[in-house]
Image 1 (cartoon, helix red, strand yellow):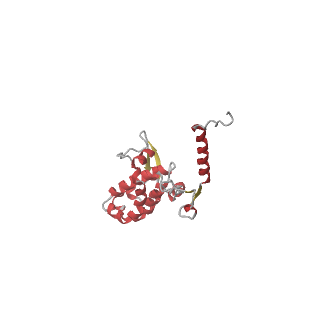
Image 2 (tube, rainbow, N blue to C red):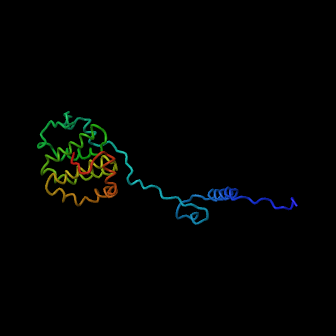
Amino acid sequence: MEEGRPGPSKSAGDRRPQQQEKKDKQQNKQQACEGFSIRAMMENSVVRGPPPAGSVKQRPAKHTAFRKFYERGDFPIAVQHECVGNRIAWKVDLENLDYHYFLPLFFDGLCETEFPYEFFARQGVHDLLEHGGNKILPLVPQLIIPIKNALNLRNRKVLCTTLKVIQHLVVSAEMVGEALVPYYRQILPVLSIFKHMNGKLFRSVGFQQGSEGK
């Protein structure tokens, strides 16, 4: 009687490890493959996702012509230390400066991220735009490539600095804003990439929205 008696049935807890082993074996059989390929139509194939586009990835900055001319001592500028902060001490009157030569070079320095090149380029651009007057409008076509190069770096700090320079450029003289319209194709593509990162962009570089500091 004891030999013919059926043995105890397996509990549900004993079945779970077996089911888990089957699932693990099925997952191990899955093979990753590229999309739109023959293997992608086969069973146990997992299509890899697309690689990141890198549209907001920061590009490496190259040495600019501004740095070369500054190291040679071609710019009539020096650092003026003050209690509030540093300023540029110009050794000549800005009204007598050759804007056709100096203004594009200072705009080229917007790509710089190291001190003192970044400081001299940024502050020098604002000083030249403030005293340029009617000399600025004929130079707008020469400023587009430096602005485009600075935006293409995708550097958050350089991007915010360049936007402030563009704002100052538009109000620096009459008809400058209209003169920039034909060059929107060079300026706007990078800005359209970062248009949804407005708050994050300013917080990442320490700026506050609405600030007017130069």
